[in-house]
Length: 137
Image 1: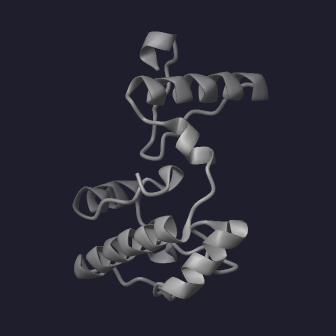
Image 2: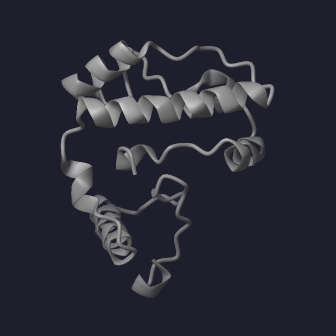
Image 3: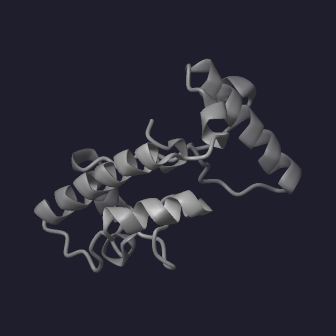
């Protein structure tokens, strides 16, 4: 992004920490970010493909692994993972990663959301989060 004349902080999910002055600026940054991903060999067209049952099953396993890691680190999670069938069913109905009316994913748990950002970043070093915008990548 620096080479494209941006002075932005890219977060773990590929988003930006800084606010934009207009929707046009935000869209230009998003397009440049997609270009950067493509330059790194990441097939961004895969993000547009519908998820399959197999994709969702892998995602579920990865999310549960992260959940269990967080619990092992002493985090008192407020929610437990839904069953794989519910997760997959909701994902196939267009709610990927959101198998409940209130989405479930390990780092979306209120126990994590209420932590200082520095603590969350330390946890991500030990318990990596699946890149939620890339399916099973």
